[in-house]
Image (cartoon, rainbow, N blue to C red):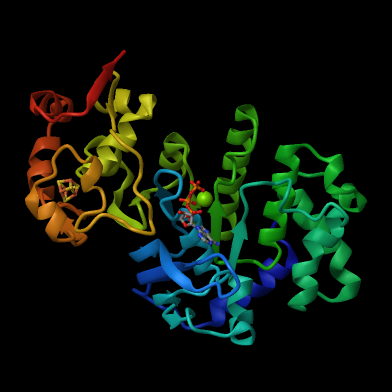
Length: 374
Ligand SMILES: Nc1ncnc2c1ncn2[C@@H]1O[C@H](COP(=O)(O)OP(=O)(O)OP(=O)(O)O)[C@@H](O)[C@H]1O
Ligand code: SF4
Ligand SMILES: [Mg+2]
């Protein structure tokens, strides 16, 4: 991998001169809400409801660190990432970047922050313009933000291509001439072009062949270390998230239900939804309970985010639900070094303390979900 290019070096020098923001997280999201209006058909197109895609989400990402965001399809991961990068405006809540509120900034005010917060998309096919050369794709952000003089642009583009493991001589080629993994590397080079401090990586490897996924994840890890970049890493694949992120946030139907460090979340999940989600990843579950592969199969579908259940949103599928779960929304509370949103989280803490107890307790419960033991 090549040495950091000039733009990175210049910008790092600027950072060194900037006052140190000690104790302030790089990103702090508080009570973030994003609703999409549901319109009636016909001419008037009145708003008849709201898709509550993200509903009161709070978390932090420290400089140079990674937070993994996991959860079933439709739980609001992409929407969260897009609001943070300001591709969508938040409905309410705050997005603090290095202590500055960026959630309400207009397009022009956002410009300096856009350089620092970049997005890597899931699909390396649709996210690259097929009519543009690689040179144009990677060079355009630097041109728009005027971070590199015209006469140095080609050199910079080539340095970036080399940094992501592509042949620097291929700057004149089109995306169609590259494989999926190579295209994702082009997307990564584009995200790196402005020397970001935070990258929101939305399922960055899920569209790639399994054999290529590890290479791209390793590349992202190398780049993170080399350039001290923080990641919000959105993924379905729990093994990849576990590998990449020291902290994990679990989402269900627009809410964060559990946040904590990787080992406590994966080995002793407290929230029933986290337990079910992890049990669906055999390698993770196997490691947690000493070789037995057990699966908690959730009953029913994820409810509609237009009309989510009252109280705890997970209650319609939760085998631990009690009356209070329909009446009161459980707040995200600090419990044993992690945060959990469940009325019975403390009891779960006791249950999860001994590995294997989760499965035993589920078996004892007459409303227990089906278990698959293989
Ligand atoms: N632009 C939009 N307009 C209306 N509803 C939307 C829009 N974008 C997302 N939604 C809805 O918001 C909810 C959350 O979607 P989102 O794409 O954020 O989920 P996700 O967790 O990223 O899912 P996946 O794992 O499938 O990518 C879904 O119900 C989705 O249909
Ligand atoms: S609050 Fe109730 S319904 Fe929600 S996860 Fe906890 S036990 Fe289940
Ligand atoms: Mg998504």
